[in-house]
Length: 448
Image (cartoon, rainbow, N blue to C red):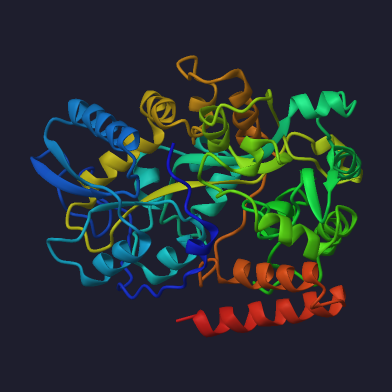
């Protein structure tokens, strides 16, 4: 599985200045728009990706080898452990050292990649190949890989967020099944919380926004918010989903001990990516997290049975139980590439070939990113992992939309979340209005 990018890394703003490339319908079967190379001829393309762990690097090599067997005339030079900053610098510079194909863990930056023209619009390539993205990928993935009609990215495996729970602690507390609604979740979190002095022997759930993956973005996913209206203005103060999500989280904070007590306890807990993660150790009984946590938790050899389920939904949306927040890795073709047709053959293979996607998902234990691969009989997984496959395929699942300034609007929302949970901000309505105004100002300033 890829090592997930820490949330702080997703807050970094960057500017892409590569010139826009206009793609038009090709006159021949050999090229698309400004891409004039012949993909049937001998070519070498360069692929930059972010994976770095030994098993991940091995999986990428296997994926590339499969492509080269099917396309013996196209050779792929692979460069791993590349961050968005390095990719950005290379795309700006262009030249022979720049990559032809890039892959990023950061879906929040798709809006910038598209609006700047740093990555080419893939719509003409999909059309030329007779592939309909909306029939190929789960709906949230088609949404987070395009911006204002420009599909400059394509999903390359995904991440889905669900609920991990300590089945042993559940049984001890007399809880028969994982919670399906937020009211059930709050009741269970109370039952599972055992105070000890000024802290906890066991905390039912760490609700604070600094509590690893319990971000505003992930809470909001269960409330199906509409982030922007039809005019591109922030909906944060208008859509009641936002106020409901903030209210729910604040109630969890207050009823599980209060912000300061929870923060003091959090400061004593282990690292998110290490074996001493508090869910692994049993210090926290429920955890909001991605599909990668299952393998990490089992490797830590906990002394309890791990359960996996979808995250709860609002009580008045009980019929939507089973959905979740989805994100993932993306791939795209550099606008500076002179081998865009050859690059497309590679991108098309690694992102739409069912066996290729299934094999890659098996190798790094991520969620497949095509509807066909999600149902493939060749998919191998722990039975509990199926929860994430189902979340990815669920039509109610959500993701955050791309923006011209990347994930800056999500950082602005998160910052208000910090202020509201801590008591620094007390007027929810006024705070959401101020947040919306800031988001609108930032977007206007980011427009070319």
